Length: 344
Ligand SMILES: NC(=O)c1ccc[n+]([C@@H]2O[C@H](COP(=O)([O-])OP(=O)(O)OC[C@H]3O[C@@H](n4cnc5c(N)ncnc54)[C@H](O)[C@@H]3O)[C@@H](O)[C@H]2O)c1
Image 1 (tube, rainbow, N blue to C red):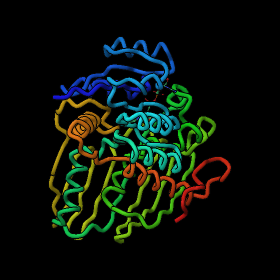
Image 2 (image 1 turned 30 degrees about the vertical axis):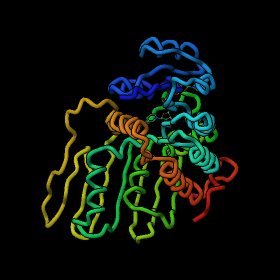
Image 3 (image 1 turned 90 degrees about the vertical axis):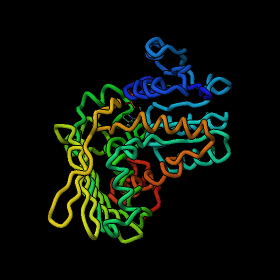
């Protein structure tokens, strides 16, 4: 089997999950860890047995590096991805792919002209309930999809924003709860529902005013072309990280995700369809535990020369949904970059 050489840029909170996933397969080897903070790069390199660098541009001419994982602040993803794709590297970027739509488009263009692939980390698509919901929609076994509801109520403390100073700011985070925490659930809703025809959203800062510039709470009504409607509520203003809740209503039954268990409600009876197993897969449960599965799948696609399915265009769809929520919410033009998003 071809061993793909890997590098991780950004040695912060999420990076260990990537390093462990690379190590947990036989087809990849972590060769370099890059962080602008020299001490962080060194500690990470020591821990995962790879080289340590401070400038990602040193990766561009390295023939031993095939895949680069972007685990950096949001506003850095686009330029790094473009540079790496232009150098022929495969890029797996953490969500969101970018902090505005033009940057995301630049990434798509770079991927189009590169021998490298661009993959986006939406690991919740690999959760068993997500796969079952998607299969139920596609098989039509419960009849047509009617409407969907997604609820994310999490807690992010003021300390969380102080730990990494790019968080909580329009320029570097690109938004708040929408673009950072609830992006996974919005991605699932757009994946399930298909093409979106209009969005009406609302955002507010309910408890973190003075700590962050961006929103900590948002809701949206999402209308899909096929007449399906999605309602969404997300907030970092809760006091615990509750499991994501989904309700997917079909003409002949309803799928419910509660406490990571998927239930079918049909003919007045509830049936358990799936529950979290003891899979040994790493990841905080409220992040979803599909990181390792997604990373291994990306490597398999690269090795076999097959296009990875969660590519730049998939990342862009979710970013467009987020842009639609921001631009319809009427927040002050001067404070955020999303008013340039296409209006709906
Ligand atoms: N998929 C998920 O569920 C999930 C969960 C958490 C975080 N994330 C994503 O992972 C990314 C990183 O988040 P985090 O929480 O690990 O952030 P973090 O602040 O903990 O880590 C970011 C690291 O990037 C480094 N960095 C900053 N500028 C750099 C540069 N120019 N070159 C190299 N390194 C640089 C910082 O020094 C820091 O170590 C974000 O996109 C975030 O949204 C995804």
